[in-house]
Image 1 (cartoon, rainbow, N blue to C red):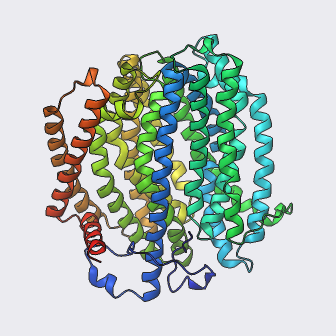
Image 2 (tube, rainbow, N blue to C red):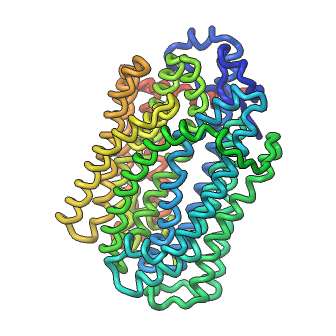
Image 3 (tube, one colour):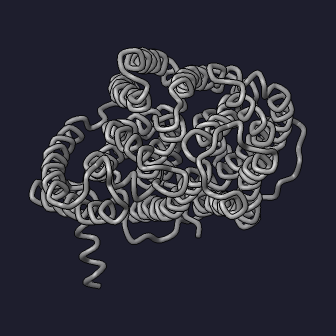
Length: 580
């Protein structure tokens, strides 16, 4: 499936393909102004419908991707256990962080807006420009892989140097196999950017499923051959290391290859071009320089997290594996809801900024903020109230013990606080990228990460190692709130009023509905059988289903009573669909 990017009457000459029809739409106006929506020009209504259709496609793909991702993490924990799982997670961090330094942040903040402008201004819709960009990126990524593999022992020392020789030795061995992942990760991201700027959103959202399926198969094979037994890092032989590390690399390679047919579908032909001078490298360097500063500060913060959690690693304590599992739970909700909205709105906001239509940009920003708040709030309540049953049902299998599940629930309870602030902070940061402005987010990020690191180090020193991962999550949550506030304050002088009044009113109603749902959820769970510290799978499943239904039903009922527009419109749409 494909969908067009947002076009207004002013932007329609850019040469974008016509958008698909969609059953719903993301309006450029607040939900409580139906008269304005009803009188919008037909072309804008179709464009808005396309943006919502794109969001729906991405949300569905993200849901399946995150679901298979959970099975993937379940298999990793079941096969490796908590301690060796910490080693595996550390080895996975290395290629991801090298990739982020090279391309990750620059892609969304610099390359997508540039590709959007080129697709509107160039006679070939930016095809030659994208070909040059892909060629340069492939060469840079290949060189980075060679350097990173050679430097694997140094990277291991930086990230996991506080552990014994068996721990760091296993991280190094896995890194030799897994560092080439950064090449295929970068290639996938670049292809996805090209597809998104050509109105194709489905393939990039579905391709990670291939990766997850490969890794699920790899760890299933591991359990069949080697069993599901908690081991120490020194217990793994080269056969186990090759299967785990090589299989993880194969999953990322399959994901990248799976995107190639979609390039042909949108009419893009990848022809190597080496005339890099026509890329406008000076502009890319200027914008990318600030993004590199932003990424570097983030990596410093992540470096602190990885080091603190590797020092706190133990058989039953919450280390990197549990921290990563909980963070992925947050990212599942964020990815299904917020990322789908942000990814669909980013080209719209970029086009609006390029045309000087700041009213459209701020309308999308306000609407997006209210939407992610209203929809993510009940999920955050479920994560907090049902942390124990979620941890047991999702993760307690094989070598991942009941004690590990209890440690996971504590981290999830604290992490739930940061779900909504994280989504809002990301949305505001992407509004700066649409301008395009990478300097302001980079400067805002410095005090935000400094605050995060101070809190995390302070909590680590003040409490025992068993609270280390929860302390990292609490530091994250506070920093997300600070990032959202700072970004909103600095964005308003650039683009005008961003609808803080409507946002505040919606947030107030959401807080009331969320608190009511939390109280009902706690009451229901307290009446059900099962103790947190010795919760069996069957009792956990009952708590999760019954408690989740109580929380969801209460939140929905209160949202209807309080007239939270972002919820009532969805309910009305479903009713119309069922009636039709």
